[in-house]
Image (cartoon, rainbow, N blue to C red; front, side, top):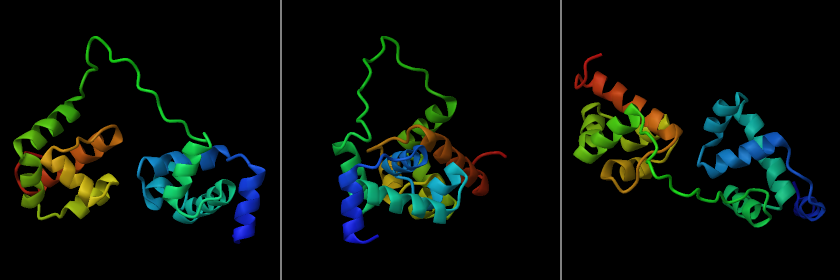
Length: 166
């Protein structure tokens, strides 16, 4: 798209389609084009087409710019935190095991024992190597779908390294 087309689309405020909103939301979750394609059951090329239309409609030039503009134009709303419940929500067994592995340092030992880099684990989980480093160091914890992906990756690595029975 040319600059004038970008500006015109942004000026006329064309609404995003449901699918474009889905793609934009998945971008805010940090997913790559390939992960978005897998999640939405479309090709990576289709995701790129949606991105071009999103950029045009919002007047954006990059993914980060599109997300920023979407929040500023209130296309996406910042979720409001719900009041904390009196009883903490139940923690899945997977999340509890991942937490124990991270807190004990076993997550890093398992990854190294399987001979994998943080980048390889991150690719399996749909996150960056830096995010895996944060998980391993306890600076951050995986949440949502990342818990399941990280648990699956850790379990598979532990089995491959003979650290957990199959």
